[in-house]
Image (cartoon, rainbow, N blue to C red; front, side, top):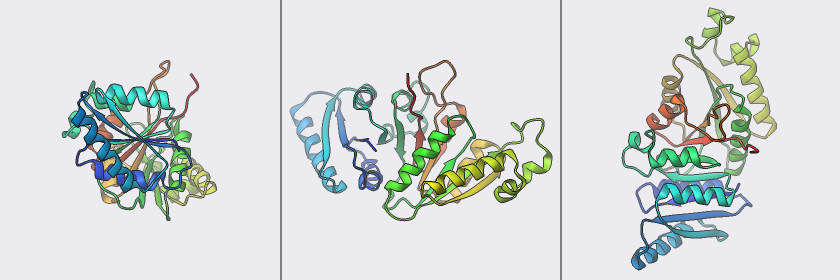
Length: 278
């Protein structure tokens, strides 16, 4: 998986390096680690080179391209990801405030929405990625999210536990959905062949075929609240959601639900973008 890692000499770097080390260890694709400094200064360039060399030692990967770029983070990262054909961007927050970090129009939002690849935002340290929460909305792009999650899980050493979550919201339930279906758990939904059960069964079978063991789960309530609660109670190391692509637009956006999840969640999150041919 062709990966771009961004560090910025901040407290987030430790977590970024821990997650990155686990993901790139088995990858045969080229990995780039980059540091961005605001202006061209001899001391700044020298310090950046030292920090990148130390980061390379931490990652334990010899085949690693190191880059120092000068400019604003949003502009540099957008240019680098579009030119380098990366599949995954790994970085920590570029703002001390989580809400400001992904507020509409912020530089961080420009990065997450503007890069053509999937983005892993590191919130915390994780010496070992063990528990993943895959949120399946049942959208037309869910296949890309499942495929990417399977590839990621196969890159990480050891046995990961992946929970596939679908939230049943009574607000968005269609007119043909009976009341009792809104109260079924995952296994009951699968056995009853409800639309949600068939979706979960398909997810389980596809990921099993890819060599990934999963545990399907249904929660009932408001989508954002239930995802945040499951992420907290399940003590997941990584939450995976899919990107939203407005019809008729050739760009990715964080819709209201995704934005709320990303800004409120207290752990690392991966936003998967499907590969589109433009």
